[in-house]
Length: 163
Image 1: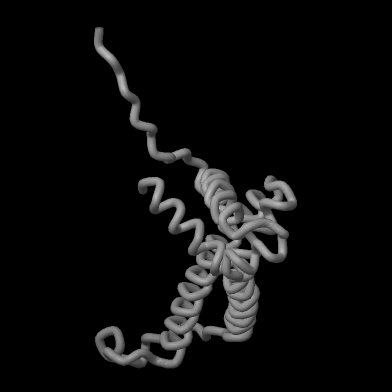
Image 2: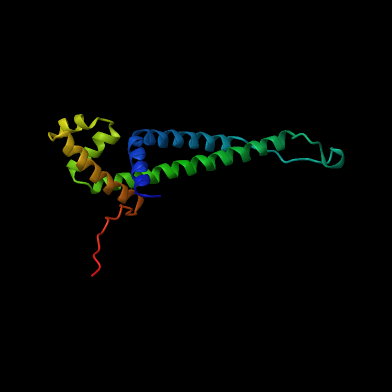
């Protein structure tokens, strides 16, 4: 990923921050429901003695119950992984926001998390819109660095003179 991609992804994460918090709560509820479902469903012991040549191609009640348990277990694993991934991202963003000055945090929260336009953020912070845009870009770079742990800022062009 290049610098612009990290910035775009950081903006996307910040803009979806509140939705991601709700998603974690909803996934936790779904996980709890699936765990309850798994605990409440019992599977009887399969009997194959009555079936000629090992049984039929259709699932009997025991096999169907076992199959449902497997499918529910797979969904449970998928939901847990999704929830864990979202929570990791949220923790990274929270840590990044905690490292910012109060002013910088209000700038980022106002623009990206709360969704205000730059002029509205500027009005709330009592600065000019241009100052907020410029400062916001620098702070966003810092947040991207903290969230992704890489510094992919474009290299300055250097003029070298050969003598």
